[in-house]
Image (cartoon, rainbow, N blue to C red; front, side, top):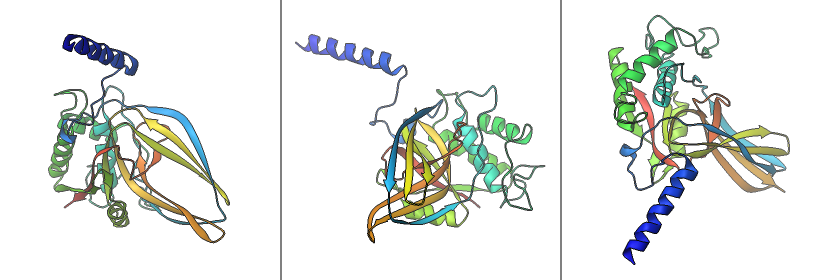
Length: 269
């Protein structure tokens, strides 16, 4: 009987791998054991319409740079996210990217990904993070150590402050960090992301999916309170993330979706 059960288990496991097409870590793995490698944005699969009389919004977007992996780099979400963080803080800490300003001085808006400086930063971080050395992509410690080394080499130091509350993100802590011009890095499992289309009495909320463990940078937040007949009936909270995956380059993440391995404010000292 034990042999039969074992055979059934092995067959089911094999079927699962065939259907999924790739191995995905189980929830039993610790955050340190996860690898963050290639991920894709799946197409829109659902749209919800919220109808309301009035709405109150509390939002801020610092618009962190939105980069994608350069040609020749595989499993590069760590280096992409690291490049976005470095470019974001270049506005506040001079020469984070030597010889280049990541933003326009007149407007404060960030420049688009160029063909010289950001590729150089991305390649350097790709190496410092030991991408693909111990497995596909990077671990959380690979990412953190590599980013810290880059920042130390530029004359600064870095620490990472957790904003996890149980298995979800502490929205208030993230909001406070963003209000103080800091960014948050998310280490996610396969997770849903959201696109919003706002109207005067209706909002449309579309859902897309990131297919695998991924690293993203958060630089904004949004809270929407919906009212009917003068009564609050719904409150939605989101974090604004640079996806690092192309179109859409930015999307909303719900801080309470339990698909997270870690979330940290990146502090530069």
